Length: 315
Image (cartoon, rainbow, N blue to C red):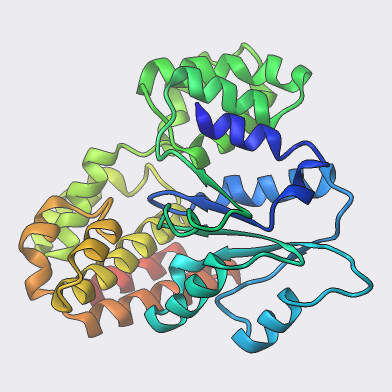
């Protein structure tokens, strides 16, 4: 459980003065967990904590801030997920970060765990895709104070025994439910847990049908799953599937096989093997943009029926 030790040392306020770069890495970006971890770091350290969205800020302006300090003040900058950057911009940032030595401490996520291995001022923290029961309980103990952990461990044990493994984001989210439930977990496990932890086999069969344009197969499978998960889940799930599909197709066409293998994680096997060849990048891009519009409209009072437009467009 090296990652638990790596995270534990970050809760020592004196630790941050010893490094200039902290690179979290993994197969996918654990949004919920890393957002919560930012708050935990901010509460622990006395250094100023600054959050920047590296995907939206001008490169030269941000580099200017990262390369200078006011009156010798050293800050902690959280830059987000550089894996989301376009290829050329990502290369620029990867080169810059791999040799960064200060004056501040930069935190970022990358899907390339070896990015900072040659920088002696850098710390690499590899986050696991899945936690087993022992890892999950240690994870809960790390995220919550002792009295809160004493309550959420009951649900942690129940979920681990039923599913065998759990992702960082699912585990963090369930920790909040565990705080409320204490040892009264039976009804939650019987009626609610499946709405939070997806049945991945069924979901990826559904994704395979959608990405291959098999209308009848998709509609038949979707009928059995559509009411299990709320619209925000579907938007998040399809957004990730399309994002990975877009880059997988692009990398395969450019013969960037190593990059394709990394981004293809969590895509259906049939798409990885053959369906990518017939996929239209333009259609995938437009469908991905449509999901953002649906998400915006739903958050502003729109109906869940909006998601049908996405399926109509894809099929």
